[in-house]
Image (cartoon, rainbow, N blue to C red; front, side):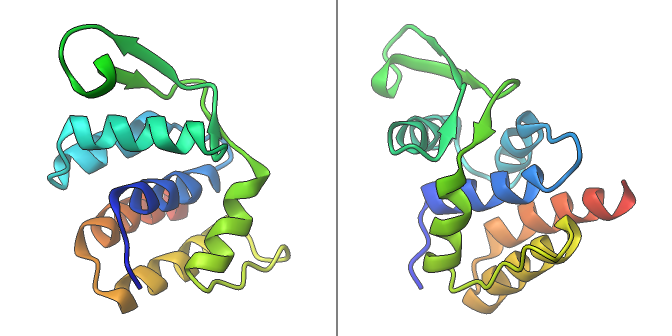
Length: 134
């Protein structure tokens, strides 16, 4: 399975979305801590919005950064219904609507661990730990 920044981020956003009150800015911080540079993250968010996976992203623009994006704000962002269907297909997940958010998140983490993709696995593991605490 090929995993790029866009799919990593989308998956982490989906895991965060399983919380009763998701905060997608936490995902942004965790990817920065895991070593993803801000330009890569920002452009991936722009692509995800353009492709209809995420809505209500605030882009702060200016300067010479890629696409003129200085930063993104995810305070009001929401995932679309297309996101779960995409992840089921691409990650070969079987997301059972009967499962709670924690179980769905663990299934996603297992797929990333099986694929050996460490950066996303670390970000997802932190998010799932927060989900379990809540």
